[in-house]
Image (cartoon, rainbow, N blue to C red; front, side, top):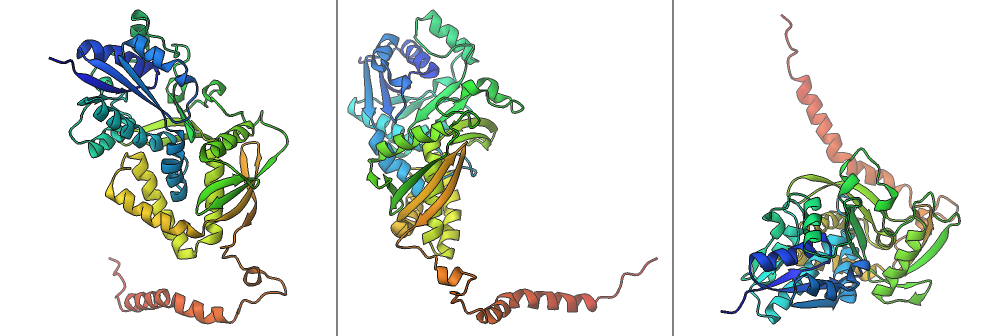
Length: 410
C-alpha cells in the first residue's frame, strides 16, 4: 500500500520545521513541502536543502511575487483595505495565494492531505482552511499545532535541537516573523505585554523615526485606474515599485504599526507590523480618490473598504460576496489616475501635491477670492429644504410635549 502524501505549507520557521519531522513520524507519510516566495528574504536561503534534511521527500518553491502584487495586493490597494484602520493586511492578503498554491501542488502530486503550521488561536488557520475548503472541498486538512504535545515555543526549540532540525529562532529572541513585499508581521516574546513598548530589535526593516534621516525626501507617484505605475515619471513593475518604496520608506521610519486587534477567533492580540511601501501607497491612493471620486461614491466606498478589509482578514477571499464587492471597487477606479507627491520625514507621510485629469476640484468654485463663481444665494434655499425634515420633527415633538399634563408632585 502506497504511503500517504502530505503537502505541507513550509516557511522554514520554527513551527513548520518541527512540523515536517513530526508529521513524517506520526503519520508515516511522505512529506512534500510547498513554499511561496512572496518577497520574504532570509527564510528562503537554503530552504529546499533544509526541508530535505528535516525529512521532506520533495520541496516546491514557487516565485509568486508578481502574481502576489498584481492579482492580490493591487486589489487590496484599490479597495483601500486597512484592517481596523491601521493594518495593511500583508499576511492576510498572502494567505489565499498560498492556499491556492497548496491545492495546485496537492492535485499535481495526487495527495489527499495538506497541512499548515498555524496555531489554534491564530487567524491564519481560518484563512488557509477556508481557502482550501473553497478551492478543493475534498482535501483533508491537518493542523498539527492544534493537536501536538508541545505547549510552548521553547518546547519546540528543544525538539528541534534533539532532532538536529536547523532553526534560526532562539529562546533569547523568540519573535515570530512573517514577511512579504506588502509588509512584515512580528509577534510573541515581549510584544505580548501591552504595557511595554516594542523594543528596537523587534523591528526588522525600518529605522526608528528618531534615528531616521534628518532631511525629508519627496516622492511623486503616478496612478493609472487605481494602480501605481511610475515613480518620478519612471515606469516600474509592481515588484520593482514596492521594493523601491519599501527601501526609501524604511530609511525614513515610515510604516511602523503597533496595534491591539480583534482576531478572527474572538480574542484580542497585540501585533507589530512594518509596512513602509504599503503605508505610502495607501495614503497616496486615498488622496487620489478624494480628488477624483464624487461625494456619494467616495462615502459609500469607505463602507465597502471596511467590509473588504474584514473579509480579507477573516479569510473570505474566495467568496461570492468578495468578488461582487471587488466589481464595485473596480468600477470606481476608472477615474483614479494622476500624480500624487508625498514627503517622507521622521515617520510621517505628508501630501504635497495632487494632480489628475479627472480631478473634481474646481478652483473657481472653491476659492474665496475675486475669481469665485459659486452662487452663494442658492445656499439659502438649499439649506431650507435640507433642514426641513429636522425642523418639522422638532415642531411636532414640541407640540406633543406642550399637550402633556405636568407631572404631579406628591
